[in-house]
Length: 182
Ligand code: SF4
Image (cartoon, rainbow, N blue to C red; front, side):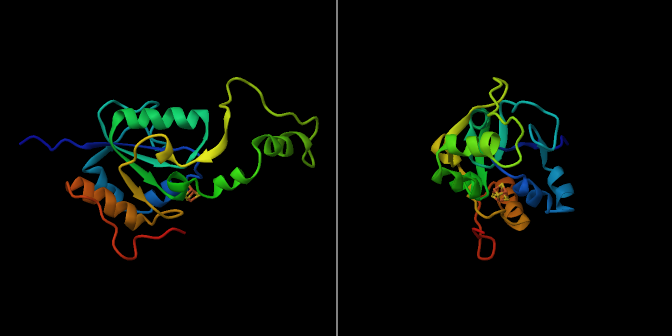
């Protein structure tokens, strides 16, 4: 009997804090069960640098705050059959989107140039650095998203439920107690 093919799962953190990934790892020993059914592709948990074509599930934490975020998000959409927005930042920009109340130039000036305690401050301008976007955006504004798991972060149980539903070939649902926005 041939072993059932494992689903390929890629994950990334865009303008996120890695808290959603930590919550994912909070499934604790269920991770071993999960690894019987999935293998990780590009992810902060692996050393794979690009999403493999034909990846089954992409999980995106964080909104879009710079050009590299947009590039990575498009790479995920292009290569993943199912894309999941995980956490408040990916869904509506989250707390980082509070910067949208201020002009980007004012923020950069304050943080790098005129703020207290800076010696010869200057706004970084090396071309290696990704250009910041004027505003922080949720990811659905750039690519189509198949499922959303709310929360900051979503609970490990919510993440587990969505993944196990998908593995079972079911439409994912989050019942009472698994759906929250804080
Ligand atoms: S939703 Fe919350 S936990 Fe997740 S990346 Fe954003 S700030 Fe961090």
